[in-house]
Length: 251
Image (tube, rainbow, N blue to C red; front, side):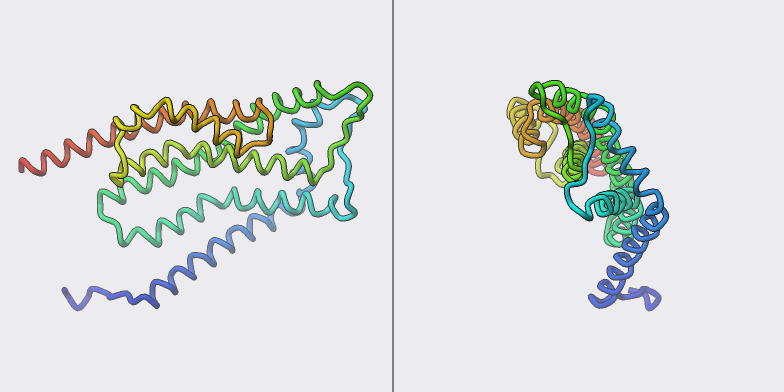
């Protein structure tokens, strides 16, 4: 080993880890500070699917004294974290990249980009597809004479739970690719387990979403489709990887 090669100790790695964590926290704070002025506007935008489904007499209320402040504040913090996620993933990638092989680096970078894209896609799907359908159903089945008045904190907890559930569920292709890449399983084995995956999708939908059939189904169906996408992409990578190993063996 040449003298120009720098040796990193455990302390050096801990210092670098701290540095990258601080950069990630700073990024979240910068995004949060840039949006805090618009906190009420952001909350109003997020609440539009419910407000659009409410009857004319329906409204949102604040049952707690400070909830009118803390609900938009909390939403802005979570949104800042979501927006900063690509940069946070980049910091994680930069920390682990020196210890990866060339073929691993070639796969990890697209996976990080894809995971961010899919997470945002899950949030967008829940907001633009799930919320209008679910809220229209909820308000339409309200008993006669019941005035719909949703607490803003309860609504925020509900939508954040769905945002997170759909964002995580949309990561299924990434999980499948990583499982096949690490040798934990292979695409053919996953195809044989398809009936169990379908049942598991509905079970996960039941656990991650509020206790209503609509939300569970609207989460389970995309999960099954994403499973097929993940198996297809993993199959392509698995095949190319096998061919590359065969060529290296013949060489």
